[in-house]
Amino acid sequence: MKHGITHLFVPGPTNVPEAVRQAMNVPMQDIRAPDFGDLTLGLFADLKRIFRTETGRVMMFPGSGTGAWEAAITNTLNPGDRVLMARHGHFSTLWAQMAERLGLVVELVDVAWGAGTPVREFARRLGADRHGAIKAVFVTHNETATGVTSDVAAVRRALDECLHDALLFVDGVSSVGSIDFRMDDWGVDLAVTGSQKGLMLPAGLGILAVSDKALQAARGATMRRAYFEFDDMLRMNATGYFPYTPPTQLFHGLRRSLDRLLAEGLDNVFARHHRLASGVRAAVAAWGMQTCAEHPSLASDTVTAIRVPQGVDARDVLRLGYDRYNISFGSGLGPLNGRVFRIGHLGDLNEGMCLTAVALAELSLAAAGARIDLGAGVAAAQGLYATPAISRPRLTIAAE
Ligand SMILES: *Cc1c(COP(=O)(O)O)cnc(C)c1O
Image (cartoon, rainbow, N blue to C red; front, side, top):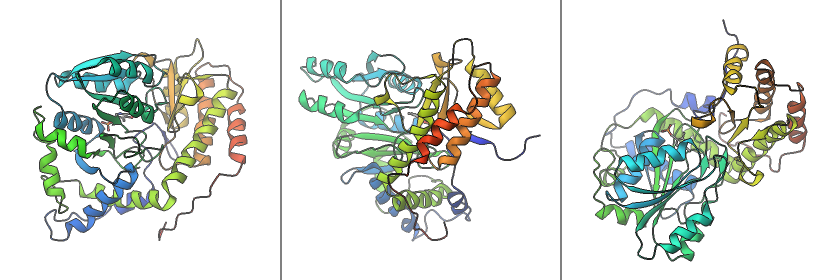
């Protein structure tokens, strides 16, 4: 029998704040009621602030991040279109597979799992593409499998420097709402996220922010789509309605999670994630272990992927952590299976929770046979957390 709580340190689904969970405990309601837009129109407006876009349109499809990927592709591209993508982790790999399945010609750049989006190689290919054959460039902003954050702004600069007008697609599933993301400043055309990561909700919404240019492309795009048709969604959304039944409970939760994020202030949210992540990284360094991210400048503030020492199977770390210590860590995905375990540190999190994750990671590593000084990582993280936070976010919402 297990006692106490099971600690959730997977990088999605993330912990749902109690206030958000309570906010979802409401009766079912009429999705065609005259005042339904009172709930939904505010969500669209505030999601735009989370994506940092003024000119883009936000859509919420019942589904998950993967559904939002599909919506982005099928609405704006044509079968046979050439697209430029990189493969440097499980999620970028799945995205490329989807693009192929949907009939795109994928120009794939393979880089190490642990590297970021290869901006210079992208720039070279875009520069060589004199006739504009490449219709879209895809960037996985935060590769959740490897704990690597890529430089989206640099990809935008590469496009601009080549005077290339391919659409810029960004997977922000594990970055939007927790790592600095700027749709308008970076000229992102299609940004994708889901409800169960930085937005601290259960899974169930695939969320997109779409630029004017992407909407224009959608008008002529011939790829087959039905459920994910932008046009149907936007037409109904204009007055706050949906073309089919949306998950209203999630909307109430989203209302509360947006209130929390905006009350804290997005920059404070990002600073908190950076601080918490820095503590986890200090622990990894104290263990003498390596992150999957090849360079500190690539290290993600929402998830750390840790390479286990030679002779240790990361699957044992996960299993022993779960069985003995009531904690879920993220597994090593694809070729990283057995070599890596991940600590997700995004969403509703504080120093004490991260110290728990670090302490239980030490016990799990030791149980799996790693030589580790118990407490070394905890002390390193504590050292980091002992310094005052850069800003002291204060929630001002009633009843928090
Ligand atoms: C979680 C995740 C996805 C997949 O999202 P689902 O909501 O599980 O469909 C895609 N991309 C990244 C970077 C992710 O972290």
